[in-house]
Image (cartoon, rainbow, N blue to C red; front, side):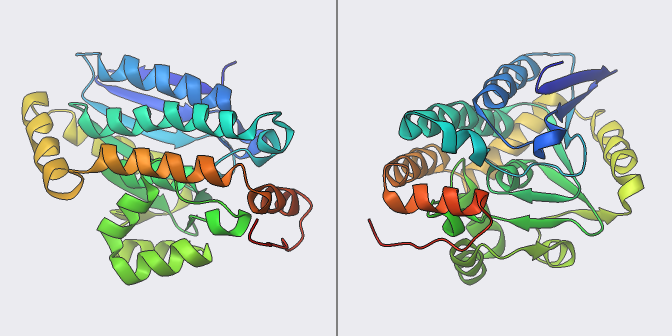
Length: 259
């Protein structure tokens, strides 16, 4: 079974991140499969709504640091993963389908970005969100800096980007990161109910609506995605980021030296 599962239910597509043993952390294989699956969905004229969810205990833990630590060329691996995921983000924002993220457990790093870039986010009670890049000497990628700052504002975005602290689901709801909060056993039912309601919309109208929102809020998305990629690729060559990844895997506090 692949790292992405795709199921179709009438006009609704269910896309499941399928690395539950790794909390759906994004490695190169998952990033590639996600890119190809999203491309297929974007070009399927029979689909009207997409639900993105995670298998197992969490939505997505972000990048797979264990694969990063094993990479012979970390910069190349990071660049390749982000190249695929940036296209995923752009496809989600431009497709003529309503995209709903159904988030449970936690969404960190790139997983948080996936949730934020969706048109609608439904979260289970107890869910936590985090960027967490700074904790490993890295920087935001795949649009996370853009989405967080535009949604919650400068001061909150600065605080949570720099600290990597968790955002509790109630705060996420109050700040507009989440549209609905439901019991965990109701999360997929609620997402499906919304998808059924919205799948009756004209895809032409959805396309124009999303284009208008993109033009107002995310007009510079391609530029930001490229700047983010350049930033984290450079950091991947530093001793600090390698130390941050190693410390995370060893469950200790990193010793950053500015090198």
